[in-house]
Length: 131
Image (cartoon, rainbow, N blue to C red; front, top):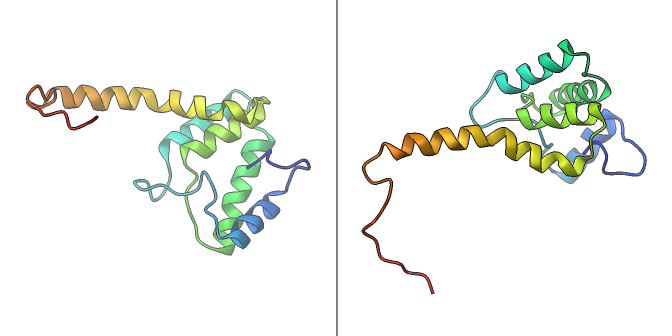
């Protein structure tokens, strides 16, 4: 979203383009968090504390603000926080998916660990229905 055109777009232009196309803005909204995504807030605060937060973080905050004014107020989620900080670090947008996966891996491992305590975690009695 930040770097998908030859010429950088302003926050206003990004919001207008997404609204015109009826698309959701990546990084805004969350199914669980209503007021704020604590992961995003901690990431942005840490970037600020380390002097890493710059134009990318400010642009994402501005996108959130403009979208709230023009359509609906949505929280900035952790994906937006990661993308904004990556942008400020000058990292390639193509690295984004990898960082998003890395950020979710501990949660996935914890989820699997919790399920391992369930009696039917390993379904040894089952019928294979594939080819």
